[in-house]
Length: 267
Length: 261
Ligand SMILES: Nc1ncnc2c1ncn2[C@@H]1O[C@H](COP(=O)(O)OP(=O)(O)O)[C@@H](O)[C@H]1O
Ligand SMILES: [Mg+2]
Image (cartoon, rainbow over all chains, first blue to last red; front, side, top):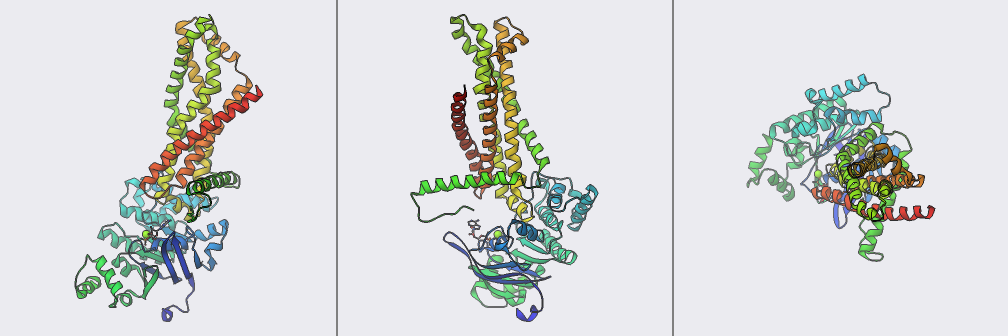
């Protein structure tokens, strides 16, 4: 890791992070550096604590132990006002998009904008809404309700809603989960477009290997509460380690031979 | 987040109950702190007031009217024994204004409005919409809780007085059909016995019930358990708890008002 990242600024720094719920030890000694401009993918089975990890990064959950620094600030030590200021620079795409279902798409998009940027004129708000809708390719949905959208469209609107505040960091929680393969490819493309257009640093949480391969500069595998392996996609999966191979099998409905698995991934 | 201590101070039940009372206290205190302190969601408040009124108006009209009418019918025979049917309007108005209207209105609203606030906020909690507000640097407490609690506190007193008016009209209908009277004479009679204290205590009751319904609904929804059954539990819990509290408040307020009579 050190060889290709040393000279870059670390925007998220996690050291010795522990988190448990009652007797359930979810995160056990997690360490992570995310450098400016990179897309880091966190891979792991469901229930391994991937969502918990980014909820801690965004201050929705508090760590039991350890240090979580975002843009140089210790998240757990921030007061309400400081946390709000930090969150302006964070975009969070929730696993189920979490669109406000009592509001239209347009109202969803302007909701964070009008409450955080004071004294915008109606024209400026509309322009900004149109701009982010355009960057996710869904101009026509402005007056629709979230319930009228497909799963992929909801994800896009969820991304647009975070982009409206020009975040520096994007946290994607399973952006392709539950989508058909074509839509997955589109969302993966969108994640890469967002990075080049908005200069974001991203953590992408997924258990989808295609998504990991297409969007990730660096992959980390979360297993039993810590990162098991990290590196580029090839580095992580070029191994005979039992747990990594198990993950393959899980994703490709148990192909018995490992050669078959490798073939499927490199396609 | 709720904490789950493993060893209990007194017993599991009493500990959990005290913990819940403490949480409710913190929640109430936060409500008062967030009302002041900038960035008021005026539009959302108006929207909520309108929705609450709209939701409960038909049922309150019907129940109020029928209660007024039936109460008049039931009271007539007893008054007739003393040849005092001319007292009907003032008897009915005292009953309606002092006791029935605030209670009917708030019990109906606890069922219709409290449950829907509980369910709405719980489903927003479950689908992470509340978390989404928080991470987009918007204060969900200001937008969701403050507006809804204020809306019930403002709207339920208005509905209460409306309910009293409709109830008196129901009573008037029954009286015109049986005794000779006209609207003006009826209202003159009806308001003869109503004092400022009656109106004041009815107002205080309605404000207290409105506040209770909003706060309990919001509390149950905001702290709903994750998962689909959390939504049903929040709706159900909002109704049961707020009705229980409303009866406690009723007893307390009536007791205090009687000291002043
Ligand atoms: N707020 C919470 N309270 C209790 N348990 C939780 C909470 N959030 C997550 N968990 C538990 O932590 C584990 C990891 O959850 P999560 O991070 O959502 O997994 P995933 O990797 O699928 O995103 C799960 O077993 C979940 O039940
Ligand atoms: Mg998850």
